[in-house]
Image (cartoon, rainbow over all chains, first blue to last red; front, side):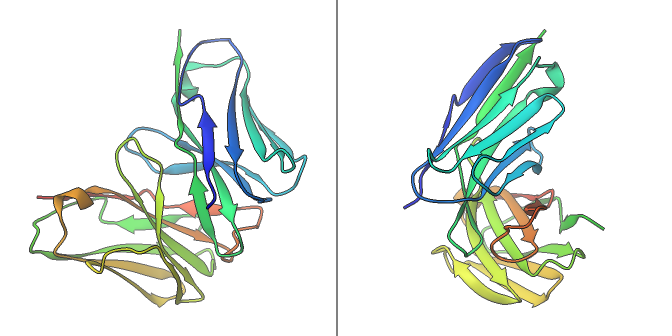
Length: 111
Length: 116
């Protein structure tokens, strides 16, 4: 059974600071996705990581994937209040389209 | 069109009611999904349709009945639900059922269901 663990689950940051969210998973997969969810809203796709060593950046967010370590990171640079949301990583299971989500990291960026 | 459209956005239903949730996409995606998300929890997969055929049913109670009338539409028929079924129901689609394309999975805005 594939397990996906995110940490931390809660993160309170000051504006301007850097931090990293970690996503570990328990079985082999080469498909890793990061999503953002605002309260009461749907999931917004942030990054699609499909190979070992993949690194993608969008604005203040950068995601990477190490399939050998079964680890993905989401790095936040110089946080701003608008980044406050819950961030989920999700791992693709096998070839059947199933996504297994981590529990999510609730990020709060304070002035 | 790069969206997945879900209707209604909000639904309140009694335990004896029958209702349906609808999901539509016009991106040519051939895989469509229903997820259930309880408050402060991650989404959990309910059903996967690939090329209009049910591929995965994650042991969902029979009071939830999915239907895929064509490649663009996905319905979730609800009957005799319980209050614990109250949740955000998310529809998603992907180019194929591995989702291993650069656009990954696209989620709709969801239907917030309350069972009273």
